[in-house]
Length: 183
Image (cartoon, rainbow, N blue to C red):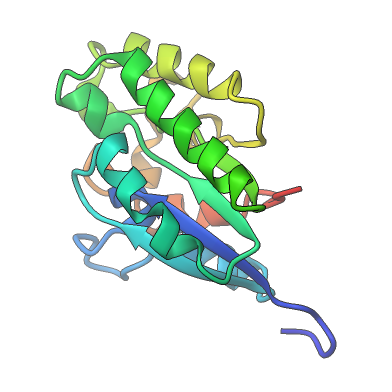
């Protein structure tokens, strides 16, 4: 961290996209670690796990938010994969955002990634939930747009996914290098 730079403490809560990719042989990394590597002022408290739905992610918010000034909420794909309604996932994300704001935190939300292994069936529900995320009234980290393959809409570029579900190390680096701003 540059001399005199003030650390920015951020809670990141989510599913395996936030937890990182331990199944990638090259390196274990998640987007918070990649963001901290890109901007050494960032200090993350991460509460995330594989397969978690938004209602389950919400249970970590208060613990993760202790001592931080900002919150990033990520999740929703497991709700869709488990057949939960889009509206319920959006409502859960909205509740987490409002809870973070009530705690006095600056809040951002990440949208859902393209899902190669769920394509084409999951593409429309992902786009619908992402539209709901865009309407939540806080900054949106554009995870979907960052990893979507322009030649194959609705899917990640092959080099940016390790297994068709999760980003590769390079995909996580791309997410971490986003202009990470939580106003």
